[in-house]
Length: 368
Image (tube, rainbow, N blue to C red):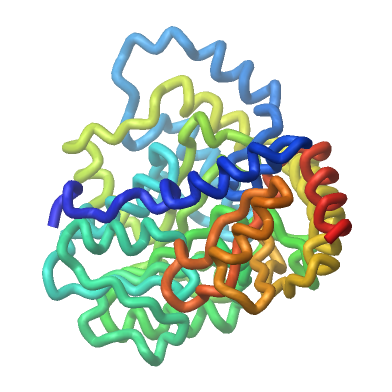
C-alpha cells in the first residue's frame, strides 16, 4: 500500500457543516480542530528570530544543548531522571513520527499495530502505509500475538482519557510479552483538569513507577504544539529505549527528517520555561469552565475528558446529526466517526478558540 491508496482526508467531509455554521448571523465558532489560537510566547519567538542565520544543515539528532534540555524537561516535568543524549531525539512535529514509526521500525505485511479504540487516525494511517494490520483495542489482554507496535495515548485524543500508573504498567508488561515496541503519545500531559491531574502532569510511560529503570522497548512521544502554542513550528521529540532511538535516528538521517535549526533554538527556550505553560493551561481551564456546562445544558453528556484539549460528548444520536444541529447554531465540531467505528454517537469539541468565541458558543448552547 502507498500514499495514493489512502482514503480521502476525512476532514473534507465536514466542509458542508462548516458552510452552514459560517452562515450564522453571529459568525462561526470553530471547535472542530485543535489548532492553538493564542500567541507563541515572546521568549520563544525571540529565540527563533535570533537563530535565523541558519546557513548550515541542522543536526538530525538535535544540538547537544537541545538534547540536554529535553532530558532535563523529562526530569523536571515528567519525573523521569537519568536520560542521556542517546535516549532522546527531536522530531518535525509529532504527527510525522506517528505516521512514519511503523516504517522506521521496519514493519510490514502481517505485522499488527495496536492503537486505542477512540484514536487519532494517524495511528492507523501509519500502519496501512507499510501494509501492516491496524487493530483497535484498549485491553492489553486482547492484543494479538503478531503485534509489533502498540500505540497508547494518554491523555487521549479525542476522549481525554488518562491512563494511571497501573494501566501503563500493564501495557508495558503485555507489550514486552509480545516483543512489541510500546509508544506512548503524551502530547496533552500538561493539560489535566480533574482529580489528581488538575495539579500535576499525567503519568509518563517512562516514569520509574511504570518501568523501573528499564526503558527496553518503550518510547514516549511529546509535542510543544499544545503546551507552548508552537503548532506552526513543528516542534516535538521522542524519548526512551536508546537502541530504538538509534534505529529511528539512522532512518531519519536517510530521509532528511531534520528539525530546522531556528526551531531547535526555540524548542530549547520553550523547554526551559514553565511559566508560559502554566499561563496557557489557565487559559484553557477558563474556556473549559465556560464551555462544559453549556454543552451539558444543551443536552449532551460529557464522557471522560478529564484531561486534554477536548470535550468528548454525546446526545445519544448519530454524530452527523449532532454536527448538523450544532452547525445550525453556528458551531462546528468534529464527528466521532473520524476516530474509529466504536463511537458513532460522539462528537469532539475543542477548547482552542478565543475567549470571545467560547463565550459566544456557550450563549448559543444555553439558548437551545
